[in-house]
Length: 200
Ligand SMILES: [Zn+2]
Image (tube, rainbow, N blue to C red; front, side, top):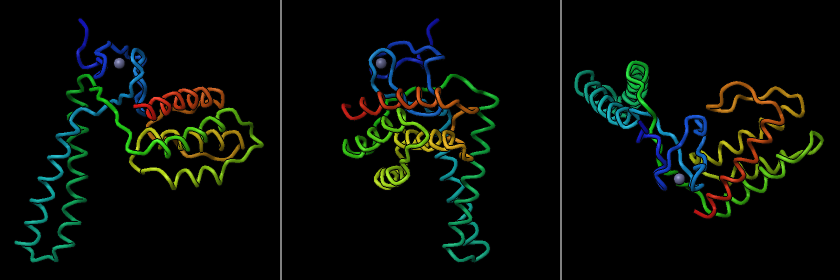
């Protein structure tokens, strides 16, 4: 029986498990619109975090007469930690299928274009070519919370480091290490998705 939760939110086409990219937003194989996998229980974590923050800060202020700024900071730390543990517990015991939702990029077409130009040139470059200043410049121009652009830049930095034999940072959410050729292939696929994001 087809699983309704792995349908593209745009074209309703079924998306095979192997076509789902877990670590970044990606284009639907049918209609190419950008979609992203969201964690189950994400809404639960948000509500739980807020409830713990309010309860914890209020009790610190009322019962212990603690400074209100310190109380809110303590409540926030406690709320994030506890709600994350609770979400992981729910995911582990009641995993269920993931949800696919429409992905909307937060940045302007100009910012997307500068990421795209960098990704395309790094994907085809060899080890001798340096893009350090471009990478830093583009990084300073984009939203920190734009998942597609951040994935593109992290993978760009990853490829550069592996070509130059430098130690590289892990790319957030990406399982295992990629060979330089596999990384180039992945960058080309990100470039296609960035083009789609510019049109969306
Ligand atoms: Zn689709």
